Figure 1 (tube, rainbow, N blue to C red):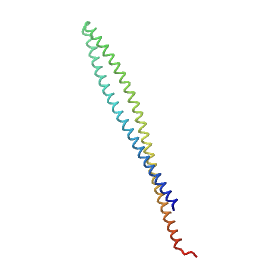
Figure 2 (cartoon, rainbow, N blue to C red):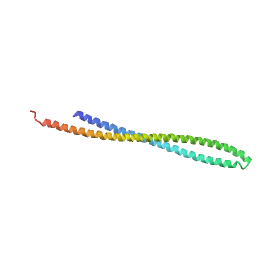
Figure 3 (cartoon, rainbow, N blue to C red):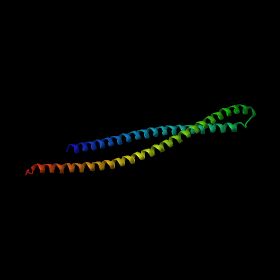
Figure 4 (cartoon, helix red, strand yellow):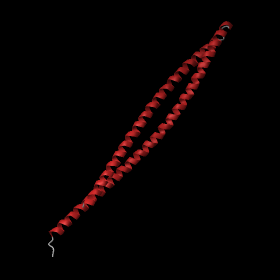
Length: 161
């Protein structure tokens, strides 16, 4: 009777540890996924701003190129402005390329985390199934304990010949 009770408490402890582990894993991966999602949104916003700046600079550059044909004197002034704008454009293109690489890396990490999250959810479902089976085992063991108690009571009630 004492042994079966220890087994029941051991199984109950194991179930509790499994539940705590599943809950902790779920919270950790949800937090990691949310953190990555916010980083992705920030990087995407930065990319949009860089693209907008890039388009503005490109429009300024186009206007400067059209004005170059008006006169030779203005050609030198606009030529210098063109070089400045061209340098900025190249810098923006570099920034845009870096931002695109960062977004690609974030998307890969996001896909990886989504896959890991899916695997964890599958593990959680498996663990829930295991918990149900362990609970069934506990119920059967408790029924066995009750049967054994009844047998002991019956043996104690039977007069010894």
